[in-house]
Image (cartoon, rainbow, N blue to C red):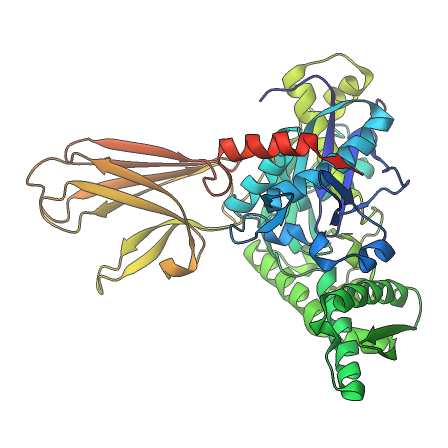
Length: 525
């Protein structure tokens, strides 16, 4: 790990908003405002004239723009090779769009703390290799030295423990390790993570979530409700017009926020010269979105089951993510668990603050600089250990011993504590086999078509006249930094092959360099 000259920060690259934070000399994780004075920057891009983009335009301006010039919710497309947009004659990708968002939050933050060079960027826990690689590439394209990718709930737990004086408090003894459930409902993604911790040790026990569940899905229920009312009165669907849909989505988002403070809100919709005003009560809104909230409760139950814990054993349920400000979220969690959720953190900035804490730990550990902050980190954080689990199973394509059909054989199930190494012996399928190919998969489904192929490991030059069912040992190792190493050993002749899976999906180095040069030329405001 190397550090470049400049400030080191933590960044929460979100679906709807992005936030940046740093550790000041007193050891406080401080969110940094943008040029508009806000701690959150909308993760929304307006493709203006050539070489010029606007990040986080006002809702009014975005609503008036041609929808073809607006890019939003790009986090949901990270790692998706099918996402394509064209601008300035270039085919842009989710990595490039995200890089422009990062460039905006970086250049605004630099006005407060000076040059920013190094960053820890957060991702949902269940992001797979392709999405993590895409996030890392976005940071590189933005000109950042990405020193680590950290999981969002881990970052939030760091903030929780640090602000409560529990992290690194070597003089503070716990009677037992504490259990915290982090409930992270953002604008576009959700995850729940069970963490066991002491002042010097963080251990993730289980995690699960959904990359397609967040506040914008609550918004869409309002959109559908208003559109249905419009259709009933006027006979046409306003969602068929991209421009009308853009305005309607913005108005429904505003109504959702209003319903967190008041009992009803009115949404206006105008389309093809006709209009309608629909009043929605908070109770109606909660009823039309009850199944979305229940999905998060079901995930909590699953995570506790996987982590072998009960509600009664929890010390806290920590809410992060702006969508947890909807009153029904905390009320439903308390009704189901009997625990009043902890609201002592900013749901908007807690993840970025935790990333900044993690970044400070890494910087002091690897750079060894002398400063007041370094003294704080060495005193309170240098002994902190973080233990993670894998959010997706890792396996290989094998043949079922009875049917002979291909199956996904899981070598390392999800929620396995990292680092881990697993060994298993397989057997050749035919006589005189000349090579063995291990197809490395990501996912827990038994059907190979339902998982992701992330790499291959081939053993060639097997001994001649090798009989059928000759043994081949396959070894999987998974490090805490997310790198997978696979080895295959022919037990008869001793031949061995190995490969490190380095998140092969996504952009190659030449594409990253091309987009980096392009992003540097763009004016971002």
